[in-house]
Length: 398
Image (tube, rainbow, N blue to C red):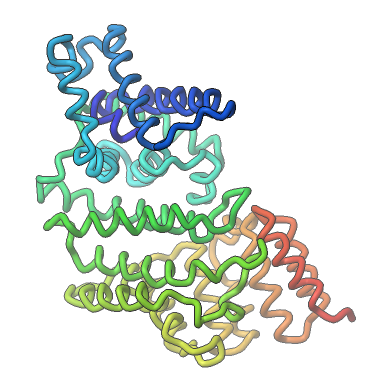
């Protein structure tokens, strides 16, 4: 809905489009709670958004700030109808993502505005994704809106050169969108399948653009396919299920095969990206018959290569865990202690939990219990809290 409105009103009216969508949703909530739910709610919402766009233009608030065909009653309705055509709307979400990758914005600001508007993330979720404060994200978004206000129509995806110039940021945004659904910071759900499948849908549409059908795009899709294949087994009874306890017979083999196909296409490139290494790691997990039979030495090697390309604290955490599985718990603890910028992981529950797992393997049960209790206090939702509580309770007391 936001993308469709921005197509009508221009990127300079991005904030106005978001406000209009909020008005439409509030109207729906008020009308529908009395039982007047339409037969096709999405169509109702989109029609209401279209009417809202017409109202905004007719009120004169946007006079001179929209396309010429929207500034006359003779052309307003046909032009709006064309912009809200079903086939036009299908491309709007991807075009809005590209539009937010304005070169005038810093890469972090581009990502933040993509997550906020096309992807609909809350401020808190964006802050978690960037390991930053909500106040910092608010300021970043404010500056980005001011910069985008100088723009105009949605990005033209037919320009190969412009698509390639903005492609890396689009990759990162879709990756973050998938990750937020896969193991994000939402207070009510540790897994949100709709975000994962939306990210995969957008990525598959992305490679339909000739300029975007690159090895890196294929590696990203492969990674999404491998992880999406395990979605159904990540939550049981409202509790997070770790990799070693998941029922591998329920993993989606069709998605795994699709992922292997895209991973093969990704091999055509000369220089591997971070997505290549992440996808290769995910492929090893998907093809292993059990946690014990996983080639952890290979996983650790791939994480080492990934860390050289993307030395973030979260990648360093995953690398340390892989080293602990491949070379022993003591080595894993050493790697955890050696992570630079550990302060950015202080509020991340899986950092404390990683210590707990490795300490438990060494028989340091009291210290492991304390770490799991710490992770439980940091849990971002009920599923995580239950999982960490169960891990702490399962350890013998000293």
